[in-house]
Image (cartoon, rainbow, N blue to C red; front, side, top):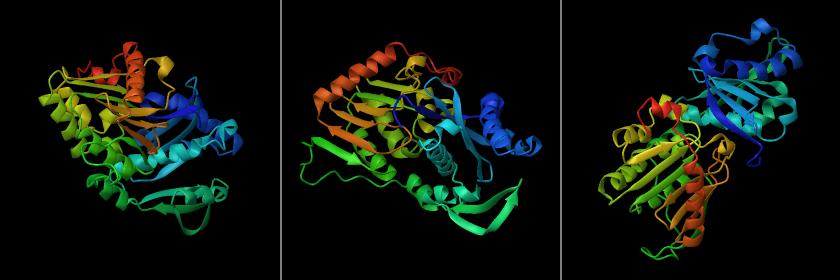
Length: 326
């Protein structure tokens, strides 16, 4: 996956059914010869959908999470298979389920795809069964530990070799918990500036009391606070009642939100910049492998300049405009 390849975004049947149908028709109805009347059901109207799009915003994959915790209708266009699109869609469904505290998760996997889902932690249940002429097997994933972790995040310990108060260096996070702990640690040391570039406000990492409290502290106590958020897709954050959205609504003159212009929409990178000394950088917004650059001022200032360039041509997000955010 490269920055210019593809990106994942939340979708809904009401607004995105044409693109969802386009992918599923090609994969299920044409390729796998699933009868059309079997493909569409009532769950489509209430499920949370995800779309994968290429760098020209054309739909290339889709998946859905139903209200009772079933993941399904996973489909990727043939020329995009083997490039991580399916795994990215599956991760998006799992992360959404954790935010909604859904567990266990279930899916009916086609027989040939059992190893793919097993790599993501799903465990087979029962025997093979036939569904529209294709062998399937139920699989199950328990995410209760991840839900508990999201509710009670631990604190990250930076290396002991760096004295308290004079930390500097580059540290790597390799999991959601490490990323979240480091984010909280850094935000608690913010004085005036917090600049965030994000796909959807990272609900598993940022929709926590610790993160919101740290940002609120800067917004309400700093002299001339500079808190700005570039959010690629605000729809899901608004739908889920993200606490940073609620905070920005209350402090709309201090916390500013914009959506990147179309030329930057396919950029999957995410970062948090704190004052002029700290950068938390991820190459891919759907992963939590992150680099923490502490007191690397030259690199941080370069990233601030890049943020400013994107900000200058960004525009208000439609979903946030309805909340009177600017």
